[in-house]
Image (cartoon, rainbow, N blue to C red; front, top):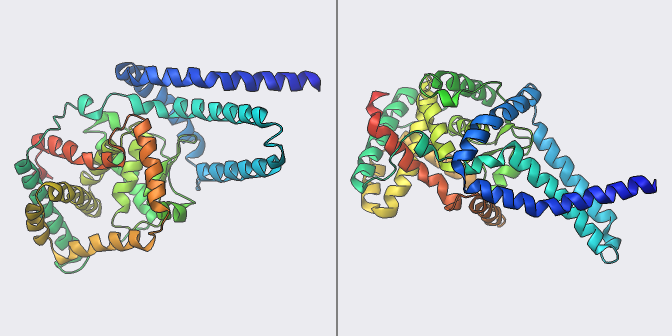
Length: 364
């Protein structure tokens, strides 16, 4: 027993000491995106992610959610059990905590987190993100026209909101089919061994203000199962984008838009154009409220009703802690080379505009 105890202490000491070395390694990687892109994002990561999608993709529920719940319960039990030793064994417990964090830190960056430091999608797709306000207004108007047309087609008139006739499971399956179609245009977005699931903690995600997340430890794409169906397709596409190794939120917003707007199903295309329009209206309003109001006034009552559905959903889960969760997530994004934090979601506008300079929206 003393031998095993001495070995355990030695292992914990080595793990704790490894943390600053890990941090230094991550800092080096963040300064070398070409290396990360070649050897990790396009090298090691596809094999790791493919393995975990194969391992857990067939399970009908979220293994990752159960993992988080189990680890959370274990941590609470450990804290309660050792509460009386916090003073007498403080340094030992601190070492144990650092060692545990070192394991989590290493596992996170090995299995997915290094993707934060890959080359930006704008570079790999040769997209010029700069745009003028005139371009933004023209693109926003084109999106409004497309969204109105799809709403009339699907609802039968301009007054009724679009009611998506699919279950969430059907939308998930159609998202997977959409990626198969998208592969012909963008081979780098090929999606094999799908693992797209509704989250078991969708209620908690709703109160935190999240539409979904990727579990980096199990490779599962999790979607908030309480989201309005109108928004569900593009969020599914967004989370699969993370699963494919794209970490930046503006990039996965763009990927979610692409897989939905190129989808043969008109309900997916409506979800995509309405999603894109909401971001463009927000950007247009920030610089020219008058121009934004002009576009907003052109929307059909049915489109506005769908937007109101989404607003009502989030307002029903509003709570005093939501800003805290958003602030934590914002800090997390900033710490992983997304200097705009949560604001980075809105940068999808420049990617869409740059793409549609070459591929006109009218061609869909």
